[in-house]
Image (cartoon, rainbow, N blue to C red; front, side, top):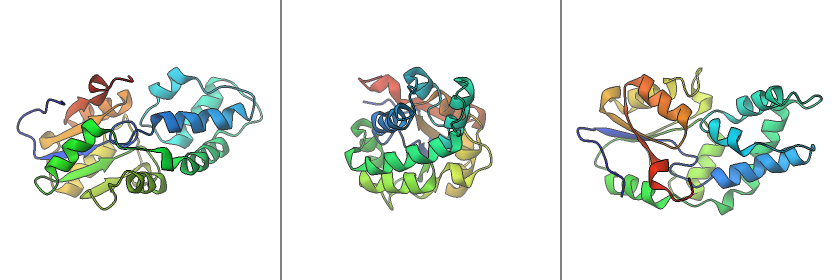
Length: 196
């Protein structure tokens, strides 16, 4: 059971790897598009970059691996398309979903995701959480992405809450850093999951 801090007034949930068990499917899609071009997507890099927008992750990867003749933006777009084809495999992460369900209608709740809006909305629908949250903030809605706090600060603003009154649920270091910079309480859900 996840231990909640005291004195909170609202929740902000990251989506991928926090509320939705999408990380294995995202990684499968990453590997698929990279393997097509003759290289692997490093698993350690995948988890280091958790929470950052896909196109940024792929542009950085191509630069980091010094791969010539491959456009990181195009690769990221293809990866997102592949992920959407696999979306039916996604399930909610029960330990986190139970918290969201138990506080529905009691406090404001938001999604604060580094994913693109289309992907976020389809993922929420796949796990049965569409039209569930008071607000949904994606990478398409902010200028600065995690680890910058803008995603979470915007979610708090749209819920009408002060940052200090929000609890962020996250599975990625960039997101946890963003919550810290925003002055919010945070829970690293990896501490409660068997596969991390």
